[in-house]
Image (tube, rainbow, N blue to C red):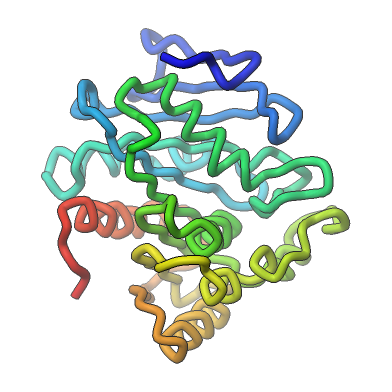
Length: 273
């Protein structure tokens, strides 16, 4: 194995882990500080070469443990793998870098939260699971601020991401202003870092498959509907769904299964209806 990309890395002891979860802390060069990731490596992924990696991005106020310990993401993945709906994958659930109430997953003046997610988290995965390599298909999904991050990354780096999905996504970074205590001075003001639509319209190559959804009682429903119609007008293929629910974990826990099934169909080479 090549030299470790981190000056330090601390992993939890699998013998005392919860439900097969591994908790990792690394010294991030992109952030200039320590950062945390929760991993789920299902038994079925052991021994598989280039095992697919699914990044799950949390929302404001959250951290690396939220998708697992509030949303039960690892249990949903394990069930779908057992049912044959999802091929074996590794889940990587990183913190957003823990800037203020939320980093937006974009580059700031002195910290690059995008590089942390797209470059360093997969590198950490390769040390937790030998099957995760530079050839592993990379999927990314997120909720709220994490949905903004996931869909925007698909537009900025289409050649690196196999598919992307968002739940209850923020679609314009200005929507964060009502949620975070801090102001956004020093954040990237590049157009592709401000709106999901711009990132997708200005993609430097063919876009990967896209899926996003929103609850009928979600405060960001109008923005998601607008994004859906704008993408349709632009001729950008995507899947958009609405269903009962709000901006909360019961909704995200339920609809994550739809996203993981979507990723499973892509891995099997199936086309969306």
